[in-house]
Length: 223
Image (tube, rainbow, N blue to C red; front, side):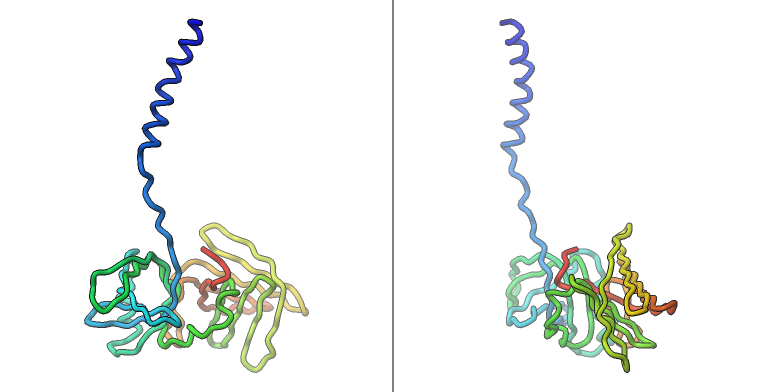
């Protein structure tokens, strides 16, 4: 009997600790969303209108990603609207003329124009890489990759993917007598022709030739 009482006294602090933790409210989980749309500047403030919507959100750089500087660099003092692809948190705003607030902490893409809203392959695409001189692009999906180059027919290939430390990826394919490697790494990248900004750098190695470019994640993969 004495032994049972001793064991009960030992367990009392444990029960008290459980009650202590149970009484605390856990912080609410903040849901991250990815939005693409038209980015504009009004009275020095950034606004984002998501694709196929009329709502506009006050855009806030919550992750110190240098969003205002990137926008100024692309606009070059002009008033052209930009296409932006961002991740962040939606919230309410007391400012007039907006439907809410979008606190962005990650930049995927930023470019002049809004044609990217009409990309029908975005949701299924894992990522897309492209470069210049010579021009090339690689679209990667779950079933294979598609290599496109001017003056040559599109080349669809199977691939093997290897995830590397630091978030880098290596894709390899050997088919139709060609050896292809695509290296993608998390690094700010600027397209030399258009000035478009991407969050990934890319390197295409095709039959011993090396071509560099930029890349971005599609809607077919969460990061």
